[in-house]
Length: 464
Image 1 (cartoon, helix red, strand yellow):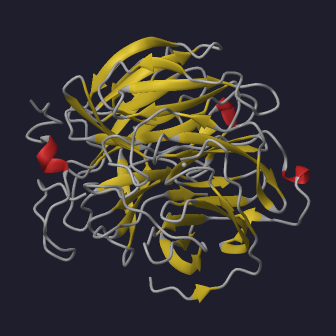
Image 2 (cartoon, one colour; image 1 turned 90 degrees about the vertical axis):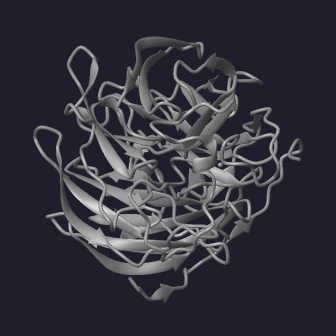
């Protein structure tokens, strides 16, 4: 018997519908700038296969940087476990403690930019937008990653079914993107709104879907096959595989996984002591305690049963001491403490929003914003000084649906936490919102003409 995912949504309603992109969609239906192409200046590809092989958003910041919170994150996923179906979506990134001076090179970093991953099957691209002081977006360029996009089996709106598939790292000035269809990861050096010095490396597994960063280390979550996490050093010449970092997630997927059994996101705790992965099909939150050298301290993760069904996205509060997990089954958010040994303590039981299929979750100050792909809304949450989470209003909607904003998936928050940008997969648009003092969202811009959901669709967004 199928568990219901939000009002009126069953497993069948979350599978890919038979209509084509361009067909007008009712708001209740869940489906899931012509810029100039530029060739990257340099491309270097390292192929490193692990022996046991048969994944803004802005990076998180540790406690002494920006109040201790890894700035932003995203994830989605769907899980079938104990008779319940769960949705989860993509990965998140932690802002590094290192200064840009640690990296040889003259990267100036990103400035007033929003990056959107096209995830095209015939050649993945990054669509770059300049952002003015009022949050309005204007196209700045489109850049090929040198890899291919991917599409998970039966994904309803989000082809990568994850959070954190596109990450900007402040310390190195690099943008990191997954190429799920070619099992690679691309790094770019960012100068303003321009992407340069493209470099491509093997992801260490099948179907990379999420990236997390802490200090000079990045971990990629591979969603296909048995699933895995693979570590990399961030260098001036891109990502270099970190020997001894590969760990299996012991899943049982095909190389191209189903959206409901793939892991949702990988994320660092802000202090870097733990690396966390959500698994939809197993309905678990799995933790790797980490050593100072960036390697996992354990051969297998510490497995924690999720308090809510289908854990998907991960975020942390301002202090970095509370972890929030978005759960797709009943559109809930659970607050945890992550202990140093990898075990989780529930601080607040799952909080329901009344919306449909919550997968993504990002923080802006003391507010959090969640993307509900089931009814194309954004929910606002407020955390008080004691760490209690509540909705910003009685109806659980900070941004209502609109005809040009269908298929809400990933979100990104700017570094100054004044603006939230939301991907609408079915419409092929990105909406920008100003964050008001009471947590309400006011729409300020819409970017159109992005790859809409069909055989695949855009997923992954970062904002600076």
